[in-house]
Image (tube, rainbow over all chains, first blue to last red; front, side, top):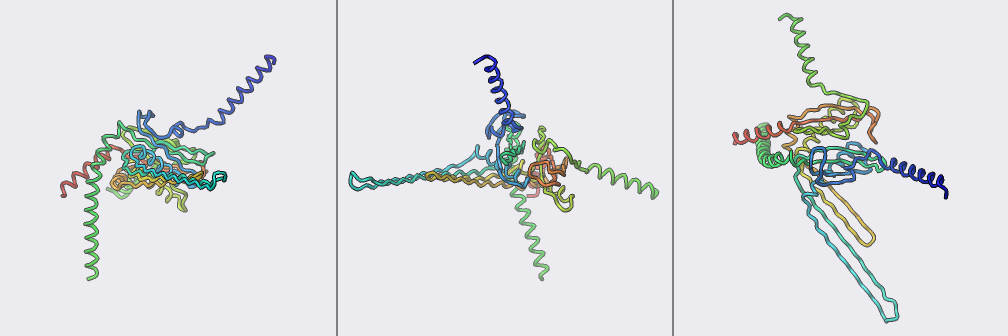
Length: 185
Length: 161
């Protein structure tokens, strides 16, 4: 094989690879494939959660679903209860040694994962829509350094505010009932 | 004060009031905050969306309202997610349900202290699969204000008890 042919093939291969790479690299951000976890971002190290929503035409619903899944993804990495159940059933029947026996086997595995967590200070950082997959991706972030004190404070305060507001609403309903009774009279 | 002067003062006051509460409504190119929210220390941003409505003003109000709800979600949410997977022989089934409940104290604070910075009307449906006339709103809340409001809430509740 002469040198010019080798050169032509090499340049063809190079162009082919470059073209292939250009086709794959869209404006897809790295976080879409990186997934959830604790890593460095624009604002230092933080916990990130990625959520996706596929095949939803309504923009608002598509984005909200992706955000919900991203928050669930983040919460899952903190607090998830997993129960796993595996059932294996095997049966072998045979008559005389020269006869072919029959075998049955069923393998069944059920996995259930439940997450329940209160997240405070977890904003949505970015969105990305991938047209080829018809999928919306959302990225949420829990900034550990900036949010930690606020999280603990908010958690403590929320219970007290909840109690106070419940009491206020009960009073308001009581007043409403009294007014209604007065009107009946 | 004479009547023309009073009228002028009234007109000026009304105009100044309108100018201070006016939200920038834009159309045209997709703003960067639609896909990447601004990152400022001590501030939270959120985007709300509304589909087109018969009266365009309604869509703007809905988008702003949704942006505030999203802010509340950023402040505090309860996340419940259930994942089920069943593997039987060759078959495989997976299902997942996620539920997000916004804490109501977060809604109260956001309603009082958030502000809508900008509205964008997607006149030409530039966002994938959207309808022309979809409105996007960018809302902001200051985290120090959140903290201060929570503290004053607690103190006033202590005093009344």
